[in-house]
Image (tube, rainbow, N blue to C red):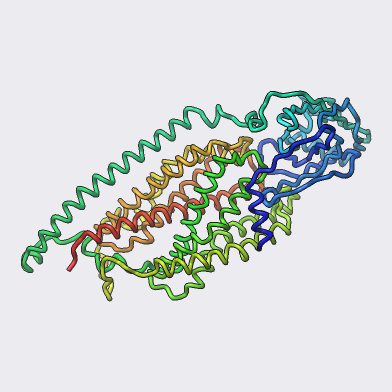
Length: 573
């Protein structure tokens, strides 16, 4: 437990390397795969490339985030030293039999690119090219590296592929490289700027979508305030007048609406164990999203391989008490007795969903020999974090929640017998409210979804975390406003089943996000085949579900505060 925690802590902090003159600089070979699908990757040496003559290196470390993302660095065997130029040098020879030629031809036909790293800077190169007729295929055999340095740090790397050689069976192909060092004015802090795409992420459409969502928030908050203040004032006035009526007048009067269900509105939800576990998990996902976005804004996490995932895992483990506190206290307030079972379900709900999906996709990745396959040791490490970090912290949160806010101090007494729910119009049914509830929250985030999807499924580095923070705040406000309005209409129809309705109406945002992912897959990507399809839809299902649970929890918490407020202000005999 202690080692895992220390490892995760170290991963959050960026690692920087300074070099002495003629010190070893390692060129790592990472992956190779089709350009049209960034997520389908294989080990670089799964193609019959040859390795340089240098056998040993002085340092190597792999982080948990890298292992989970399928980053498996292999040493190129090229001898590169800091500020030491290398003229064109042959480093190995490929004996091109028919099988190896066919492997290279397949890679060239499918537009395979490879990725390398020098000092954490990514470098991309193309395997080869075909002639116009598609009959002859050529391999690039000469890697021309130009490395920029500022002081004792590497700030820039450029690769030029040269030496086009025709692929002819039963010949030998010599692979060569050269290294040229040059001084650069680029600051070390700014060395990743060339990989960013401001014209894409800071496009007017992006600004316009934020402005549009912001205007929606102002409109919604104003609408909710106006409807609720006018309606509630009228309701309060009517109810206070009713107190002065005699019994005959009251019987003849039009008493209806949300006050009628005051004896049932605080009745425990159906399936309280699952419900409180979902609310606890949603609160934790919200806390993780908020903290990770803040860390990303401060630390520029995109500059470190796998650091975003490593940070998310560490923050998720550290915020487990949040899950336990909100889930445990809600379960206690609803009169739940099996609190240990609730704690286990709450602790493992999200990890089980993520790990289950990842392991399923892992089997497909192993079958395809893809680099995305997660090593067994990494799986064990993740399981250890779940059992030895997440579970104990969740237990602490549950105990605190039960003791500090587990008392059912409701403003109204709960009736012994539930009142019957009257007939109502079709659009007031919980199922209809649930379906409609997610439309506006989705409308406030769907353009941001396009940018997030593009950064994950295409060659874009997402770096505008300020936008993401704004969108998260807007999403929370819109979700709370919409669920409050939905719940008010439901209670006015004298239906007191508001807990699940408020949760599901907000969570239905996830259904629209998942539907949008289908549109994105068919119209914005060029993916195909079992591996790519299962990888895409598997992880999109995980993302959508987590987003839905978070929105549902936010919607429920806001609605719960609203319901408590209105029933506190009504004087009930």
